[in-house]
Image 1: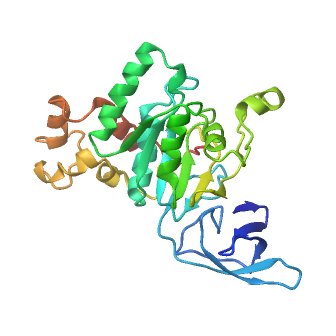
Image 2: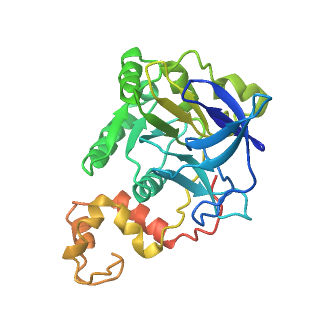
Length: 302
C-alpha cells in the first residue's frame, strides 16, 4: 500500500496488510529510478514466522507514470504503476493550474498508455470569468478526446458521479498542492479522513499534506492512489523529436506534413502550423509543445 523507508505495506488478495521488505536489490528493465517498488506494483512475497514478509519478485507492470526525481543522483521517480485511469485534479482559482502543467501531465500519460480524466475542482468558488474559462478548457480537451469533469468536493451529486467512475478500477489522483485532492478523496471515502491543507496550514504554512503516494481500497470496489502535490512535471525518457507524437491532434497530422520527420517548428509546409493558423489546434497546446521541446529537462521537478 505504501513505502516507509525500507519497508513496504502490501495489500493482499485476502484484504490484509502485510509489512514487507525487499530481498536484496531488484533491477527493472534498466529503468534507473529512486524507487525499485512503486505504489500499485504487484509483488510476490514470502511470509516470515514473525508475520512480516519478504518481497522476492515484482511482476511485470501494465503501465506506470513517472516524473523527474528531486534526488539529483537519480533520473526519475515512478509515482505509481498498473493504473486503470489517472485523474488530474486542476483548479482555475486558489490555486490556478496552468495549461502547460496540464499538457505535460497528459503527454507523460500518453507516453505510458494511461487514460486521463481532467477534473476541474472547486467550481463552487469560480467567478463568472473563471466559469467561462472552464467551459473553454473543457471544450478544448474534450475535442481531442480527453474526459473532463467540473466538480465541487462539497456538492453531493458531483461527488457521487465522480465516485461511480472509480468503481472496480485502480485510479490515480495527481495535481498541484492545494487543488483539493485529499478533500475530494475524503468526500468519496469518508472513512479515510485524510489530512487536508485546511487542517495543517497552521502548523506547516500550507505545505504538502501528502508526502508519499499511497493506495487505499474503496468501499464500492477498486482503489484510489493519492499522490504528493507537485509543482511541475518533467518529461522523462521521451526524446524531444518524439514529443509531438503524444499530442493526439498533432500526431494525426504528421502524414500531411512535407517532411516525415517534421518537428512542427521551422519546417515549410507543416500541417500542424497550418492547423494552428486555421484555429484547428489550440494555441495553448502548441505553446505547451514548444515549452516542452525547448526546456532543459535535466532540471528537477517536484
